[in-house]
Length: 399
Ligand code: TYD
Ligand code: MG
Image (cartoon, rainbow, N blue to C red):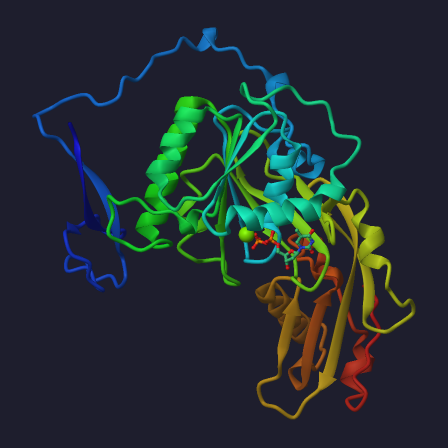
């Protein structure tokens, strides 16, 4: 029988020791030791797994066998639906709507769903279900049955990944949802919930059982504003698909995009609106984005950008204000900050605009982040409005 023990392994050089330390004694990297479970063999050399060998020509691929989640916008992003044994990481900031979307997916399912609530109590999830129950769309797309279940949602309050794995294999649900990976731990590691070691080990155990049982699983993971927490980033290479949930908390629009997908493209973007009855798919986001636009206002321009395969009309607002500060302010909301800096540099050096004496604010309305380089033409001020009229600085957008 193999015994598990943990070691702290340097992520830079691979050095390992039994104690945590802030700095690797081998390569001197800071904060690089991560707790990792190690299998210790009791006998000399023993094969643990019974791997199977398949003849490539014998493997039948059944594209029609994809199971719909019931949320068309999410299905498109996944490449047409779920695949048996698919592991999907749903990443996003806290409060963005991950649990809401997962609850909707659970409610849409025709098979039995195991919903692991590590973060909330079963009663809290039930309250959300009650809130959402008015919204289950009448036109649910026809979907083949998943698993042998009865379309029932089973809520499982647990923080122990090994217990979850056991239930997973015992109950054989059609779909498993884990909310969230940061709340799960294994007793084999000493680290606290949410530490890199725990998050990675738990995800690995869940992935292994999903593949073994051929059951799709959604794993929810939180990220901070900077997107670099212990969670999702370290999981990207373990899971099959990473679905990134974006949006501003005060705004209703939510974008769902894949940054990795082993079972489909990464160029699809799903659009949802957060309503008081849950997330509703939006087929025409431009209408929402432009609904409050005031026309003929300087500094406002509508730009056509590609978000995935979908063209979106987005309003981009730019404002340049004269400043006395030697370090003018540059604020970019919804577009890449470094990209804006580059454009400002080009306009200063090549178009002769005196932008160094202006604070610059750029904003994309609706709280969405535009990834397309097509937004580069924004806020182009005609030279005379800034170069000569230094007091006003109210340039006209011409791009
Ligand atoms: P939630 O799914 O709990 O976020 P996450 O799991 O990503 O942390 O969503 C939380 C927010 O969504 C919360 O501010 C309330 C809001 N919300 C609605 O606006 N409508 C709804 O129907 C639901 C269920 C939540
Ligand atoms: Mg949640």
